[in-house]
Amino acid sequence: MMRVVEGGAALDLTRGNLRGRGRGAAPGRGGRARTSRVLWIMGVLTGLLPLGCQPGDEASQPATGDYDVVILDGRVIDPETGLDSIRNIGIRAGAIEAVTTAAISGTTTIDASGLIVSPGFVDLHAHGQDSENYRTYALGGVTSAFEMEAGTGDVDRWYREREGRALVNYGVSAGHIPARIAVMKDPGAFFPTGDAAHREATDAEVAEIQQRLEDGLRQGAVGLGMGLQYTPAASRWEILEVFRVAARHEASVHVHLRYMGRKEPSSAIAALEEVLAAAAVTGAPLHVLHVHSSGLAATPRLLAMIDAARGRGLDVTTEVYPYTAGMTALQSAIFDEGWQDILGIDYGDLEWPPTGERLTPQSFARYRKTPGWVVIHFIPEEVMEAAVESPLTLIASDGRLENGKGHPRTGGSYARVLGTFAREKSAFSWTEAIRKMALMPAQRLEGRVPAMRRKGRVQVGADADLALFDPETVEDLATYQEPARPPAGFRYILVNGVPVVWEGQLQEGVLPGRGIRAPAGPTGPTGESASGAGEKASGTDGSDG
Image: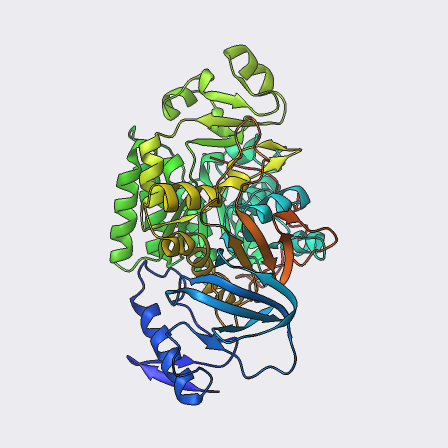
């Protein structure tokens, strides 16, 4: 093992131990640039890099034989080191073994001339967790998809159901919603419709909810998910107790805020204060879901609050999807009496995906009696754009499709950021776009999940999850009428070194996706497991906000 000390911090240069900035890393490249420089110096001194190379060049020990896959002459962008230059990449056994200017060869060769070679995108808010949605994610550059809001009530079962059957990598949180549904015997499946939505839990029920969440985190759940707008009767004390569980496991809490908009006293500002306080009291890391669709006109104020909290050392991050419409279950508590006043919209702003119709009072009442999802046109364009362009936000789709119907954000989010915001508007650089879509989400999870230190990067030792796209043509093509339409410009997508998209086409017969889990942890305070945890439903297949 080789170590070098810079600024009092030891860097482990052993292959596979390249370290990021840790969970909740603040935006900026200062530390990454220093780390890159140290790695470059050590590479030159030890002979692993040619003297003429630049920081960001890396290569393994000389290989015996060809690589499994080589990517030649691509514009490699690594958002952690700042590398943005033409390089060749050598891949063996699912990992990157060379990023170099030297000539290399392999069993499979990809000519990346004219393409950007990016780390595969990491989606922290991907409700669709089945083969249809995995295909859609892959065509849009996503190589790891996480259900971090609703989560699951049975972590072991959730991973077992997907093992060996996934096109992309996958992961899940321990879900407060399914725990509440199970404990309070709510008839709802994905979102609660009875007591779990509308009744305050007793102390005994809160304790059982805590135990179920302890069990999930002990089984390797990536984090803890909460949808407070779907459980409006959950008390402030219950929320604090749930945050305590997350803090014990150093798990980030991914929260859909309790309220929306600016109208007091039930504003998004008050809702953010609630979870910021819970994070400060307990020490649990906090991730605020889709800040713009909760904040609406108050979004700039929410971002200012998050920035100030980070400045005082609080571990808080947030996300956005690049659309002005949300989507959620019409049966959920969001559409309880008074929703028009809260959301600032009316029936005509709701769109029913199966038919494309805008709702009326009559169709609203009819559709609300049966399970279904509704698109909500309610986010001001300028709010969405400002949130996407903020250096505080990472990109997450909040995506879900069912039989080709749903929201275009499912497969179009990342192409829209690249095509519209990076290329057309020049709102930020390609490197910054990729940082928001790959590195930032990986860093959000890596404090609890060491495997995420190998995601979101194009470096030696990183997993070979890669997205190759044409910067001149990348563009989202999905619409609310055709939400499953794949984007243009993504030429090759690799998951764990296996091409799943080749020349823009999905490859049949490959399922290289792997479950991403945290190391198994200790049991909860009682040392016992809640029997039957998650009997309601282990899977997650919904969408929100």
